[in-house]
Every structure is written in C-alpha cells, then in structure tokens.
Length: 472
Image (cartoon, rainbow, N blue to C red; front, side, top):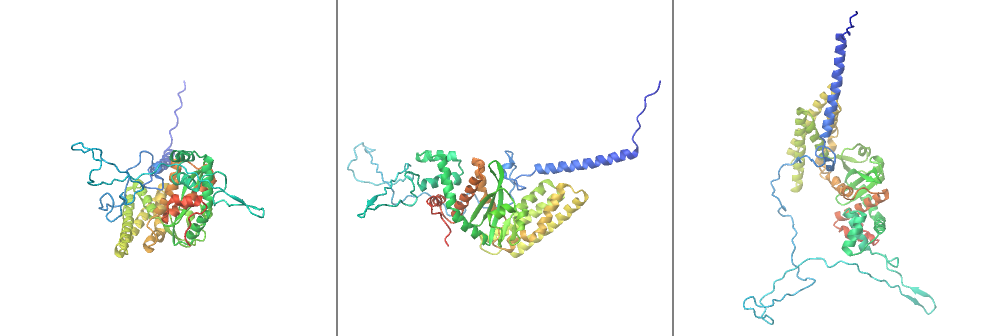
C-alpha cells in the first residue's frame, strides 16, 4: 500500500515574498483606516463642513478665543431699548373708582386726588381696507368723451395693493415661509385668502422691479476696494445648483447657477475685470481672476489646522496647535487696534508673524519627511496645507498689510447664511426661475437693510413699481 504524498513546504524565498506582500497590504490597509478615521473626525469645527452635517451628536464647541473678562448682558456704553410712555397717546380711557374704599360712600363729584398713567402698546385689529377708484368720463361740448386716467398701479377692476403684495413677499423670501404657509399667514393676519398663484405673481413682479437696483449694486461691487466672495450648494428642481455671493458692508449680490466654478462666477458679473481685493477661502477657481488682489480667509486656515490637531501624529499636531495660537494672536491684536481706533502694535504683530512662520515651516518639514517615507493620502493632505499656508503667505497676511481687509471671510459666510437657512425651513426651490427670483429679492432687501432701510418698506416700494435704489 502506497503512503499519501506529503505536500511540499514553501521555500524560505516564497515565505519571505509572501510576508513582504502581506506587509505591503497591511500598510495600505492601515493607511486607508487612518484616512477613513480622519474623515469621520471631520466636523464643522475643523473643516468646511456645515454645522448641520454634525448631526445630533455634535462635538463640544472649541473656542479659539480667550476670555474677554466682560460679563453677560449689554456691554457698557452700548445703547439699549426700553419701552417708554409717550406724551400723546392715540386713545385715552379714563377709569373712575366707584365707591370709597374706606367708608363705602359714592365718589361721584368728589375732589380729584391724582391720576396714574398706564399705557398699553398694541396693534389695532387688522383687516383689509377697500379703496374704490371711480374713473369719471365727461362729454365735451364738441361731442368727445374723455375718461380720467387710472392712478399708477391701478390696472384692473379688482386687485390687491402693493402693501399686501410687499408683506406677502416679505413672509415668503424675507422670513422663508413656503408659499402655502404664506397664504395661511396672510389669512390669519388679515382675514384674506389669496391664491398661491397670486403670491407667485407678486414675487415675479417684485423680482422684475428690483433688477434696476441690482444693476447698480453689481456696478458698485465691480469698483469696490474690498469684496467678500463665497458660494454654497442650493437644491433647485431636485438638482444641485450653486448660490454665489459678492458683498461689501453696503451691497449684496446673490446669484444662482448650475456650476460652482468659473462659469458661475462669470455669470454673476463681478469678478471678471475686478481689480480690488477679493476675499475668499482659497478655492482654486477664484485664483483664475488675475486682475484682482487676493486675500485668503484665516478662519478657514484655522479650521484646517484644527483638523491636523485632531487627526495627525502628536508632534505634527502640537506644531499645528501652536500655529493656531499665533494666528489668533494676530487677530486679537488687529481687533484691539480696531476697537481703540489705533494702529496695531508693530512689535507684537511682528513677533506673532515670526512665530507663525517658524511653526509652519517646521510643520512643513515634518510633513514632507512623512510624505517621502510613506506618502499616504492623509499625510499628503497635511503637507499640501502647510505648503499652501507658506506659498500664499502674502494673501493670508493681507489683513496685516491692508487695514481695509479683515482677518477672515466671515462677512461672506454671514451674507450667505440666510439664503441657506431658507432651504432648511421650507425645502428646495422647485424651478431655476424661482431660485433666481429668490436670489434677486434677497440681494435687494439685504442691500436696503445694510443702508438703513426697512426691508418691508423696500419691498412695498418695489411692489409699487418704485424700488429703492442707491442715491447717485
């Protein structure tokens, strides 16, 4: 009987090759795990992700600012708002005592001992008023009949007025109600049930009327010294579109486009030929506009460095944390100078800048060494960040060399926050036309508000065919 064959054992060379292959696969797997763990660690505090993506288990906030020492409440010297009595009320109601609270005798005709004034501020009952315009026709002695012309804005036998139209659009695009909720609000407030199509018509009319204002806003932005730019995703007709913003303290222009990059920016009509300072978040397409001077947002850079602190090896994380401290120190020095209407302390600024540069260079060397040895995607990301912070040094430090440029791009994020809120409150916009009307109206009322005008009054003016516009 023959014995079973014994399988041959692998040779040393085969085992060594297999071991080397397993080490390679393990290294790739560990790098991939580290990358995925780092991606899971991305939040709105250490990346450009929106706060809504953090979910219910949001991380504890990490403030980069030091305590100011100021207590809660209104800062000293800041004007407050207090309800005070007026000298000439609209209505007066006198309340007489019936009988004496001591003996019970009647007080009719008794001597007056004093009057205490109490005032209630409230709205009168709200209801629509109907104004009838009668267009009289007269027959001349020559036999010709002439009819009086209708007042401006009175174009049909029955219609809603510009004030109700302005309020409807204010609820829709000023307070982000849906069309159905706007209809319900108008019914509850004024006792009138308007059709959804009527609200749509009001929106179209006002969006068309404010076009002349937006032309002026766009021209002002093109020639402004410093303009903040940003973009955010917007769901339109079930597809991803992009809302682009360009803003200054006095002007806001919002536009909607299917593309996020250069095509969308060109369509907005501000960046092409713009020669001022463009403040943005270092997204590549902005750099294609060579006529502009670029200023990069330090707040975005800080969030990226926080990500390094949260995910990188300890040595690199420590350097990133110290770089953050130096960047925030520069901001505090600039803010203090602005608050005191003075020039930033040159020695302190120079010290913080030198420290920041040294820390970033040290971090770049450390990241470059790691990249050369293993070159994982995560290490390459760290390297690219430190390389950009140094390569674009002048653009990140524009706030130091030009007092008109802020340290961050928060004004752009604040400008675009309200339109972003609209999708959270009432969902996506169903048509591109509706999205463009929304952007036009938000641009108009925000610009009016930044110039000290009431949003509702501005909308009523536009509904009346005479939109607010910058004084020339």
